[in-house]
Length: 113
Ligand SMILES: [Zn+2]
Image (cartoon, rainbow, N blue to C red):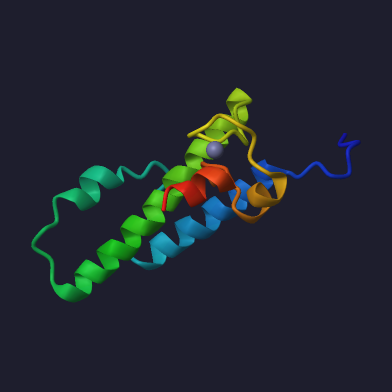
């Protein structure tokens, strides 16, 4: 039972995000992405037409996002969720709510630019 009203179900958010990414990938023709091995799938396709290249780029973006979601789910299980991967501090809940798969805190994200 969640007694804290402010507790956000990040797992549900992540699962929702994952389902959405998976269906987008499926629409692009990259279905069956339960365990997508996107590195080998996408890395060796240098000879693609421009149109296909765009699809590849989009699929790669979606796959990267999907990988982030998977990582975040793994961290939830390990109790490491919500920590910035750069500085190790806790990421603001509002940021996690907006982007449940985010890997860095606001300070580190803005320092990256
Ligand atoms: Zn940080």
